[in-house]
Amino acid sequence: MRADARKNRERIVSAAAEAFAREGADATLKDIAQQAGVGIGTLYRHFPTREALADAVYRTETQRLCDAAAELLQRHAPLDALREWVLLFLDYMATKDGMAESLHAVLTADASLRTDTRARLQDALRLLVDAGQRAGHLRTPLDPADLSLALAGLALALRHHPDAPRIAPRLYTLLLDGLRRR
Image (cartoon, rainbow, N blue to C red; front, side):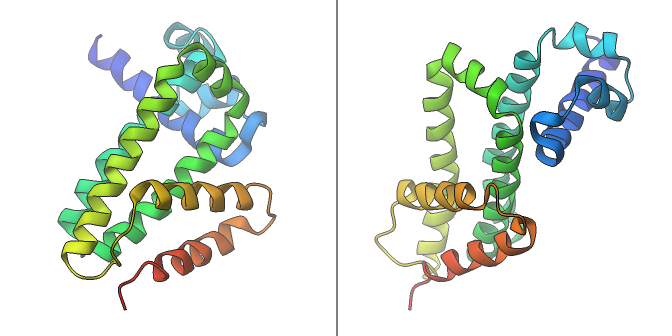
């Protein structure tokens, strides 16, 4: 792929992630193209269907979230890195919610994608939990799969709450505080 085409693709995926998180199912492909600074034809050349765009956003956002675990541990103490990662997870879930219908079609067509994503996210979370436990900040035992389920549950509970952006960080902080070693 030419450099300019690759940049256009990256801008489209980034604009779509923002639009899906902000507008949900109401995000139009025309608005996404405009936000990315490309024509609608360019968007359709890269992503012939809304599902193809949802697939690319999902894979890109999953990779970004998984990569963030190690990056955050390089810049922050383990507990702070975990807290920052959880806030990124919240954004990830909002993006996923915003493209739920299209994403459902993608995940139905490729069942292994859901399983692979879950495993990769739990590995990233395991990296953060292990670092926190080694530093003596997080309780043991603590199964990252349990924490992953708790985080997803909170995200679902906040899905339609009108004040979610304001209270979500507070609820996630409350959950993480409960994981601290006393």
